[in-house]
Image 1 (cartoon, rainbow, N blue to C red):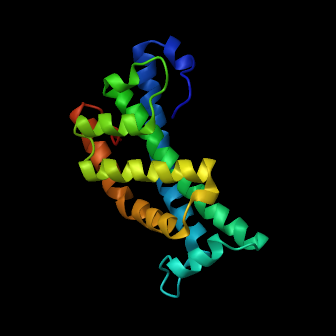
Image 2 (tube, helix red, strand yellow; image 1 turned 135 degrees about the vertical axis):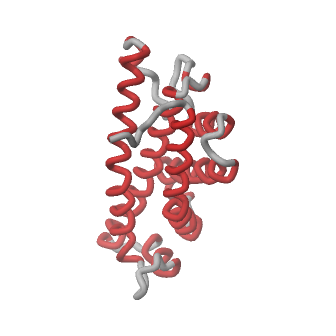
Length: 185
């Protein structure tokens, strides 16, 4: 989310709003499949009951075997993608809600958007804290993966899966308070 702004700046406010709504709707359509993709990516690290196993994950995360590394990267990449997906939804929603955080010359950071949405009543303090934590983990995976601890990542993946539904419900309710109906037929 730290990219510079692009062609959207030249568009009229109405065009930007329509574009943001379209982006959010497209992301909603992809959210379920991406969540399911993460669950599929975690299967090699799941126990007999289908639970994401901490021991299996830790062994795989530190493995030197190419096939295992490939499976781990599938899971971590899908985790990163889901976090990025949520970030994109929050930025587009913040623009639709006309939050000041989106009015600067550069794209706002994920934590600043998360805090602005929280302050506007779109997320609880706990949800904001979780999203900021997940963003830190995502950043560390993308930029310094040797610094990421397998058990910490395991906990964050589980946390994302546990919180995703509630995060989305809060997000939709927040936008509805701004008269933005994303789930209309």
